[in-house]
Image 1 (cartoon, rainbow, N blue to C red):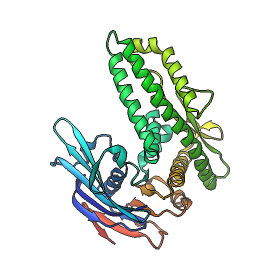
Image 2: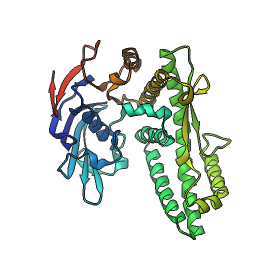
Image 3: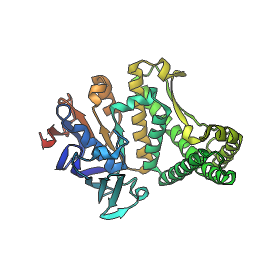
Image 4: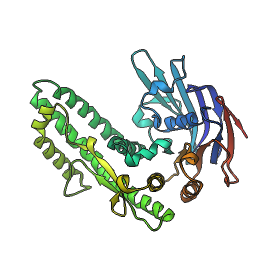
Length: 366
């Protein structure tokens, strides 16, 4: 899988841009605040429809404009597919539109055409940051891999939003709450099943990657579901466990006026030699763990889809020492296409690398 054309219109600091990336490693070199990260953000949005830098889509629209367009041509299994993601920023709301092969499609159908694994400086917070960051990582990874996961996530979030709105009433309708709880149990069980299976595979790959870089330490991922079940991985058992737990917390939810149990409170823990990495790991160990996590995500996505996702490596060299960065790239194996941003030309680049200079929102081949 690779991206052969990227076109931007009024995206971030780019008024208009069209470039043709190559297979292998594409390196964007330039000083800070010139637009390097914006290019990777655009590719990520073309892939998954969301930015890895902000939750406010309006920020991606160039100042003074109402819409931003990201377009591109993807080659996968010898088929060329055009994609586009348009952000329309209005006075009251922001909307996104997606096209695939020239036809407007819903987001659920758009996902998975171009798959990407992203490393950004903010990913280092996955170890020590709030659980919402780790759930976001799981949701983004699984939504690209399993269309059914995104549908279940959308159903769950809609039911959760409606339930929380109802709980804010002084006397919430008990029958309507029961309807929302049934929906949460059904869709929540699908989320838990997918997360459990994915984290098991991800843990194996990430542990293997970490061991290749630091053989004396044992890295482990562990799924911490908010609602435990004796038969992990069994969706029916998970659904029954969620339903039981929601019944148990019903009065507490009414008192506190918010939903207190379910997969929206799941977490993922990182362990190094059986000790929590967030509390006991050094910064170097935490950085290595994040790299192992990304290498694991790449390996699982490649195995499940049968094709190599693209790699987006934003400011990798400033966050890692040269040894770790080189080990990460070499440990990924034969990637088909990768993108790297840097403020200087990195040493020992593969001979097939394509270099671009980025200055004041202008991109030229070196």
